Length: 215
Image 1 (cartoon, rainbow, N blue to C red):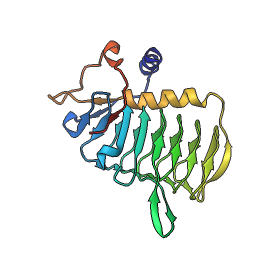
Image 2: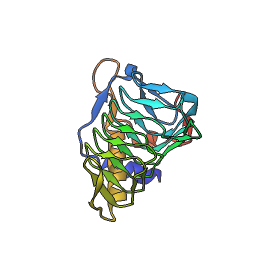
Image 3: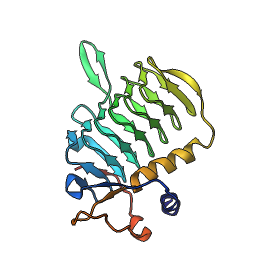
Image 4: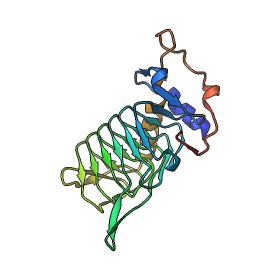
């Protein structure tokens, strides 16, 4: 698997995005977490590895467990909040799980119960309570999914309220994996002198990916 990830990364043709190392925390498993993000209840937030949490993001682990897979990119100003439901006069919160190779656009609000792997959520989306997004699905920018919406695999949803717009090709999983990995690898630190950091040799990138809390 590591060889496939490196192959995708080396084929990345997009320009790198540089960030100030002092403004991010990098964990042992390669997560890059902005210091201006807000992680509430960090003991309940698990990032498997090689994910990016950008500035202004809020993760509400204080409400319930947040389990986030590898190569997940969470865009600026997004809010991930576990879903809830009234039960016997009380409000019960449910864990949120996000698979691998998921990209979440800037300023999106996500309260889904479950997001599968290889899912692309555009900018300025609202994924309402208890929604389920299956593997290899896509949510177009500006979409507002009503509560309890189920997005099937290999489908595109868009609009407000969000609705089915069409099908995706079988190659979607491969394309989304490449997209998510490219977004991770092109996000590179500046050197302390303010110049771009030297490109990391591929051999040093193949680190073990073990679940670890985002602390």
